[in-house]
Image 1: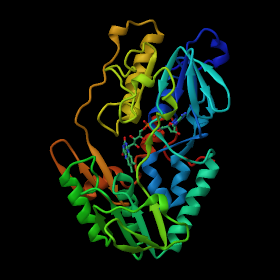
Image 2: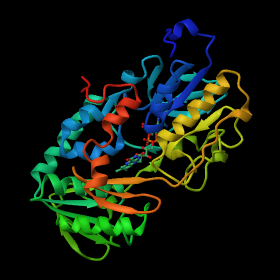
Image 3: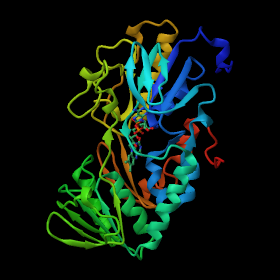
Image 4: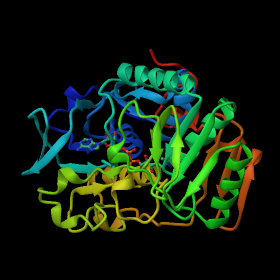
Length: 367
Ligand SMILES: Cc1cc2nc3c(=O)[nH]c(=O)nc-3n(C[C@H](O)[C@H](O)[C@H](O)COP(=O)(O)OP(=O)(O)OC[C@H]3O[C@@H](n4cnc5c(N)ncnc54)[C@H](O)[C@@H]3O)c2cc1C
């Protein structure tokens, strides 16, 4: 049973765990440790957002009411600091608003640096406005053929079949992070929904002028679109570490090098989880969080370092949703497209499951 004594009771007795980044991995870790330590979560937003539900929220803004979750709803026994971490000095994290937060254990979970609104209500408004833009457009240009661009093209093609959707991707195939077979099946699926896919072409996103309705591709083609949606990937959230004591632990791709226990290499009390780590597999942020929660609990209880759990990367299943009913699934031995993987992911996009994992009602709409 979890002990629910208030943190003041333990002040000075409990060890301090600071979690930087309240995304997929950091939110679950903070929630898992909140009754075992004095937990502080540092995140630039007052909410956690389930990232893979964001594309559905663009075509159905009310979907975001369940997938954009106040940190305070799942972190009932921890401190939340709504600011960015900017430095680490003498076992303390410095935040952009000038606070110094001391830690005994630090967990870095700053997967991607995203420019999102600070408050949940602003985020919900943003979805409404994006949805208005989509509804008001006859033609839509999506730039980027990774999971975000593909899932967004599929959401729009299914919900608004009358709109002309063009997807431009600079790679030779879609979804480069999974197998060729899955990518080809996805391409066929998009074509069957009348999405025009242009591979090995790019759009100069730095020079898109607002109000322009004509876009030139690197191949010299002209695309007319009422609305352009950029899905070109996000930068790793490690820029803030580049002048810190951890600068030597960042690899060439901006990720933190970790050992098998998910500790930053060479650090006794600093862990890293999720997409910020140099482990070659995404979609595993929640698994990392559970391993580190176990390890930190062990150390908090005075357990031996040699008893810590190792994170063992295995081949895993990836499902990319294709609108409300279909999906493409890549398993270690096979690839399936259509209603069967769609039943697993595409209806609810794991929102109920993720809410449940955070100790929340899967159905309840936050106020
Ligand atoms: C379309 C799509 C579908 C996907 N589907 C799935 C799926 O079905 N299952 C799955 O497991 N994964 C899926 N993924 C991958 C998944 O979204 C990522 O692996 C996951 O978001 C990584 O979690 P994270 O916590 O490491 O980073 P993020 O979720 O990126 O969270 C990082 C957090 O850190 C914060 N942050 C950044 N910099 C700072 C700073 N300096 N100080 C404080 N906070 C900071 C950010 O604001 C953010 O809250 C999908 C991804 C995409 C794009």
